[in-house]
Image (cartoon, rainbow, N blue to C red; front, side, top):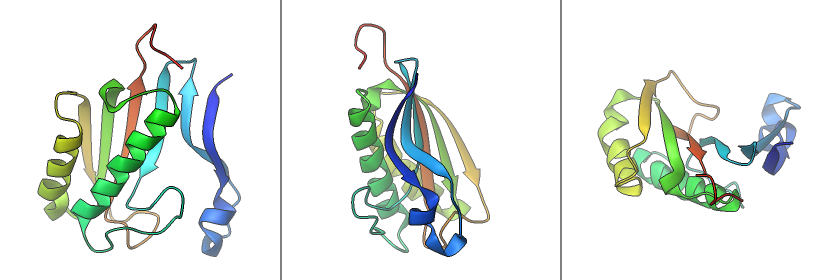
Amino acid sequence: MHTRIRKFNTRDTYPEQKLDNDLCQTVVARGSTVFVRGQVGQDLDTAVNVGVGDAAAQTEQAMANIEQLLSEAGATLGHICKVTIYLTDARFREPVYRVIGRWLKGVYPVSTGIVVAGLARPEWLVEVDVIAVIPEGTGT
């Protein structure tokens, strides 16, 4: 069975949208592959939005969330294999990628960048999701 970390229901996260989906922040599949939900500029524990209007500040929070969630799954930033970055404006690419580059210095993941019309909340400018693989013998 997969390990599901930080379970939640969308009715609590997005009450204005009248949703009822059971989700989680992280799934550890077969003990070694870690899928992290797309992270934004929102504190994991308080749900307070961080860096409203500032894509770089939102990216800092998203990467801090990713580091925390990976740690909770028994992984590290160094285990990241794939990064997907969603931007609401192509002009955010440089400041966002600069922040991600600092967090992932020496990791060398594959990366995909996508410009989208919008994210789940209008104040979110960037979303980052990752897939990590915990090397055999160092797992959870």
